[in-house]
Image (cartoon, rainbow, N blue to C red; front, side):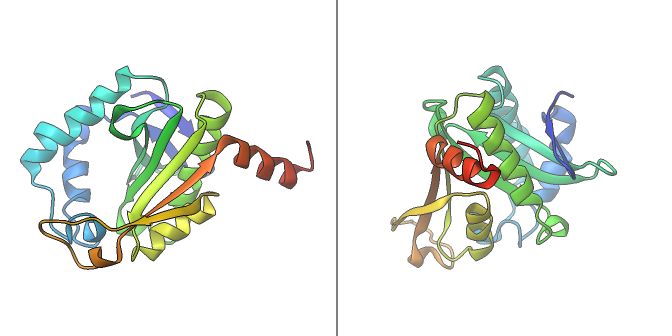
Length: 193
């Protein structure tokens, strides 16, 4: 299975059809799904027939864009996934960063490490000009990851949901980072430019 990138602790690789059980397990954890479905699991049939085929279809698109299985570099344990793709199959110069990790991988910096690596690769090699990320306003852990990846709050949106989950009344937040902002920040840190 092709590897997209490695970091100090992570390997991001393409998904394969053999990963269906890992995705079903991930999407069955109520804590993982709390801010997505209110804790309800994604049915295994939905993962097999819709979720995984959609993920696999993205590998035919521009390099680097899609969903990537995240494994612990030390032992190959599946930790979850990262998303780095245009929202709704739009312009590849603007991509959405997303992540869904097992509880065992929470709170140790994996989401930040993977997110930063994708952002850097996107801005330096894949022609990305803007990265966005969206979560529920009440999802403070995810918002913290977005900030640590360099994204800044852009707006809060309130939508009407037919079946809202707890916290939906506070809206969803969008964070963003442009390539120009990222370059300025990088140059300040490295002392170049």
